Amino acid sequence: MTASPIKLTSEVKVRLSAMMFLQFFIWGAWFVTLSTYLGQGLKLPGDFIGRAYSTMPWGAIVAPFIVGMIADRFFPAEKVLGILHLLGAAILYYASSVTEPVLLFWMLLGYALCYNPTLALVNAIAFNQIDNPEKQFPGIRVFGTLGWIVAGLVIGFMKVEATSIPMKVAAGCSVLAGLFAFALPQTPPKPLGQKVTVKDVLGLDALRLIREPSFAVFVICSLLICIPLAFYYNFANLFLNEKDIANAAGKMTMGQISELFFMLVMPFFFARLGVKKMLLLGMLAWFVRYLLFAFGNPQGLVFMYYVGILMQGMCFAFFFVTGQVYVNNTAPSAIRASAQGFLALVTYGVGMLIGAEISGRVVHHYQTLAAQGAVNNLWKAVWLVPAGMAGTVVVLFAILFKDRPTRTSPDEAKKGMVESENADQHQAVSR
Image (spheres, rainbow, N blue to C red):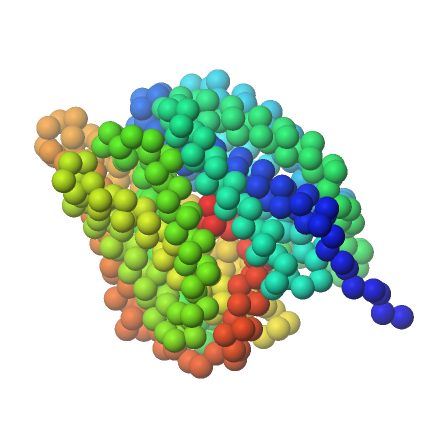
């Protein structure tokens, strides 16, 4: 006997939308401005700032184990979500009062280990309540992006970017999200059956796809491009504040607004350009963004900073989302979920982790030179480093990647974008 399909009621949709709003409000409230707090507020060096930002990639690497081997198999997702948010709130609030670097790092790592699994859990809860993901999920997920935008506007309006108040705001919202989670629709654990292995959790079944040269090039270039990407996520807010850009956190939300636009027009471009050109444009957008940051200035060329922020939509949609669609179109259905998980591990985990460490060391290097009077323009030198990295990856990808006709139509590609959300452990980015 076939079970009757799930009907998404208006009341449930409102609850799921509120869940997404709170989920990404938390992240957007403290993560963007952390570099400004550490650099201007606590006067900590660039290498520590990079190390502090590495905690989230570490969380992305560990999160699949928490979700895939514990939460999915033994406990209702909404209960785990609530507990993790409440525990994370306590850690983040305590971290806001810590000024000793080593202890602060471990507190941020502890919080990352609590927060990252919730990204997969909110997706699991939402997908469990809908019967038509490609039509229903985007309307729910968009509230996550709105939450990130509202968080940036609120923090920018409060003018507290160089203080620990954003962390306290995020902790308070995390308490609210934790309590609210217990009122979410029930998402029972999956039946215990086949043993879950490390290979399953990390999506290592997808390694067989590496035998195809173009897929191998795609994976390697995806990892390499995420190294320069970390420079923006980790240091853009500090950069804008040091350039005396008023309400930097609020202005950075223009990037998320552009994400919404590019997500809407993406099917149009996808049908006309194909995977290779879309990925190239996404990578090229990062190269151009860093040049804009390097050669702009707060006086007559301040518009270059704003254009660089607005390029977030192309950077995100044309690279990350197109990459997920490419994986969806390339991987056999039996390992499609594993392939998406593997891509998330490579990009949001390993790539961003390496990028956090390198970006911190580069910023610290030029801070030291600037202090000695050897460099007049610290940030110009900093941004030219990731620009060079991104430009190199663009050239390698353009030469080595061979596009092939996809197995899906544009409509199916849109569905692939939605399906990839469920496997993506660190969709921040739709930050």
